[in-house]
Length: 336
Image (cartoon, rainbow, N blue to C red):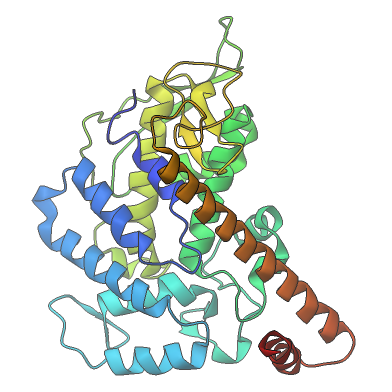
């Protein structure tokens, strides 16, 4: 059975942030409930304030409205340092949503939707892994949504039994995000009869009980204030994943064939195809299971409609219509 800390990465991977930024509040609550951050209360207050504002900014697809909101909030008083005259948590929240507009330290509003910021050092590999179509148009991925999908891509490759050394993104996670929760692990070649060539081992400075080191002046780093939030999330969730991999057989990490969520098997069973919620052997009542499946089918239907809408817009744009005209045509059709 996985511990509370080891389960955090599953919560983050399975609670979709796409068009649902409020899930960040639940994820934050689970992280702070599993890992003790008591000595740094002010830091946690700053992160929580940042997340509440990410939820607010995440509601906006139209950047002009978000810009007006940013300008309005910039006048607020702040117990924390200010960045570009804005309270730190406001700047960090806005950048965590619309950081793809940030180029060389300033927001380039004229770039609109089809670009990624100069401070995103992994944008080429992210676009290649996630798909270019997710980074264009009004409904393009927000930065915190992109971060989640990229993490999902990492554990998806692990669940499909890919070697650690072959997962470049996993190596980047181990290397880059040790700032809030401290860890030290290495990937080594396993000479035993393990089914894998690679395994994780604790490094010389690992602190297994959840102690962490705080970034000094995080808002002064060249990567931008978004790193304050991203380091907290990725360090905490990455620490959870690493503890799971150190203490469990990675083959227990699976994807349910019915709901497509990640889960961990109680016992290693290659023939197990479903998580507990979807299993025919589940103790969940028939009514609850039917309700779960109904919501799942509804979610898949909405995703399919969104894909069809995107394809229709692309088709109309290719025929010479502007994006705005194409959306008006599709909206008019849906009203009929």
